[in-house]
Length: 89
Image 1 (cartoon, rainbow, N blue to C red):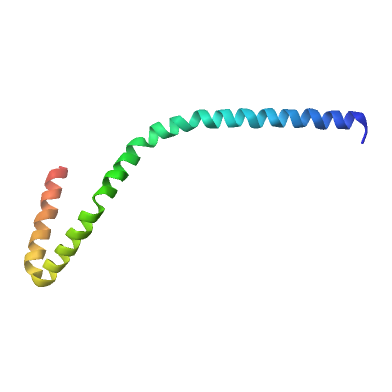
Image 2: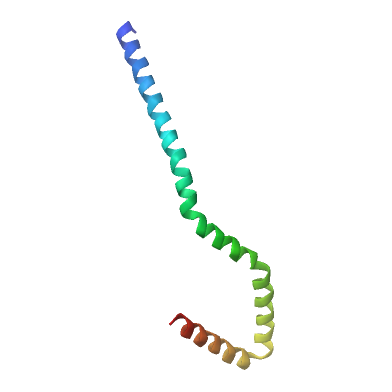
C-alpha cells in the first residue's frame, strides 16, 4: 500500500468518525424531545397499572355474580353498556 492510499484511508476514517460523532449528538438531542412527547402516555399507562389489583378483584367478583345470577348479570351489563354509550355521546 502506497502513501497516497494510506492517506485516503486515514482521511475517510476521520470523516466517518466525525459523521458518527454528529449522529450521536443528534441522537442525544432527540432523546429529550422523545421523552417529552411520550410522557403523557407513560403517565396514563402507570395509572392503569396502579388499578390492576382492583380490576382483578372486581372481575373475579363480577364472574362469581354472573355465574350465580346470569339474568341479573346480563341486565346489569346491558345497562352499563347503555350508560357508557350515553356518556360517550
